[in-house]
Amino acid sequence: MKRYIILLMITLVVLIFSCTKDDKVTPTNTNTIDTPATPFSLATPFGFPKIVIPTNNPLTVEGIALGRKLFYDPMLSLNNTQSCGSCHNQNYAFTDSTLRFSKGITGEIGTRNAMPIMNLAWEKKFFWDGGAATIEDQVIGPIENPLEMHETLTNVLYKLNKHPEYPKLFKRAFGTDSITSQLLMKAVAQFERTMISANSKYDKFLRGEVELSQDELKGKELYENQDKGDCTHCHTFGSTFTDFEFRNNGLDSVFTDLGRERVTKSILDRGKFKTPSLRNIELTAPYMHDGRFATLEQVLEHYNTGFVESPTLDVNISLAKKGRLNETEKQQIIAFLKTLTDYEFINNPNFKKP
Amino acid sequence: MKKIILNLIFISCVLLVSCDKEETKPTTTIATSNLNIVFNNTVSETPIQLIDTQFTNALNTKYTVTILKYYVTNISLVDENNNEWLAKNYNLIDIAEPLQNTIALKNVPNGKYTKMKFILGVDSIRNTSGLQDGFLDPSYGMIWTWNTGYIFLKHEGKYTSSFNGVKPLRLHLGTNPARAYVTLSLPAVNVGTVGNFTVDFDLNKAYSAQNIIDFNIDNDRQSSDAADDIWIANMKSNLEKSFTFEKVQ
Image 1 (cartoon, each protein chain N blue to C red):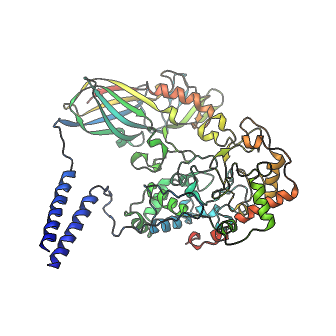
Image 2: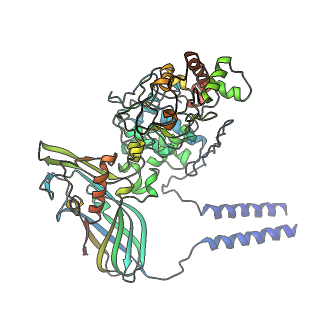
């Protein structure tokens, strides 16, 4: 009797399964899935806004591992010499060492400083001018840029599809061994979404695990003080250390790089660039979209006395008093900024070249 | 125990029935046919071929075409009773890929159609991410990598400058203001009896139908800065007048 019940139950399960399966899009490729990829749950770190994973690219263990392999694979460049990791070095929070502008495969240099790759899961727009709308979309820019990897997507896909390993890895991650640009974008994006930096000294302080020094605490206070550092208006104090906006921070009065205007074509966006997160700022020198400042002292002095007027100058800068910080205060702010360095992030084995 | 089995059997039956019900069955029996629309790319009635042919525009400037691609999307047909039938499809016309230049529409309701509409470009919903397949796949080289959005029309070649010889021509039209809404009059095309018809695109009209474009000024446009705005607006209104119904085949 029991056996019948079990049989019926199995039948039920099968029925339910077959019902739901009808809704799914069947992959066009004949080499369909054997075992589905393992879902991966990305935990939201303490104090951070909740991470939202797009429904069209759920994280899987296999997808992330594949993205990591692709991130470090020089096959993505025209002459197979450069990978994403060539200019996004983990030791420097995934920026390009101390270079102002990175060198592409032809030796030509770019025009903007390589951005760190961290906490992209919270970002709303990508690149210094927000030209890419999603993490997936930003994957193709550096591959195709003649000043960077100088490759075509078509050729990358050709190389990947005839590679001895990649078709199998894509099949494990996405259920098909027919590699498309969509799947390439999705895999790299999955890996990049997991690159979270949230375990600096400051985070440990927040969780009550360590103390900050007197200078660091004073720096934290100056950071938030509107009459002093006034950093928090843009580099929002707390978790992400950015407001995700585009702002003109008074670097120039005449702009050679139009910044956000290039994307929106609005003159109101002239000279505006993304507010970068200040996490790991100790490691991401040089600073600004064009890497014009080599040190944090220079950056602080820019915000203290160096900023210049222009029609799109950010209101927070134009309202700030010049010379409001003395030498000690600048050093204290820098001391606080250095508590945002996350050694666990730059040593995380999950982000290293596989 | 028996009760449980009966219950389970009952549930199974319900599930089976509900499964069947999910299949959609056509509710009406209107006869439909397949229709092929052939896009014929020309310069003043001369077909554009991938050879170094020199064409002459409205300003008597000589130019060539090495790449010509454009998106034709959201094709709809309007019948004599003003009923509109919409095919939500995305096609990339490309002079280098003749097979792509015949757009196959499936299951068009039979009837007499007096208008054809389409978007030259990509609609605002699909223009926001490159994470797409079909002809919207980024590997077709019709998406900008520095800005999220598709190149609606790409023409590359050379032109003979009035000032200093042969110069490169690189025209990449896109962004939301560039989206052109094309409406063509059809001579009551009878779907059900005809299998296909031809639409002509005249590249010269794209540079002159309403606003004259001078290659000496507009030879390199990437739709990327404010200086391109006038060119974009001019191209949009020109493109809306650059297509004509040619013939039923």
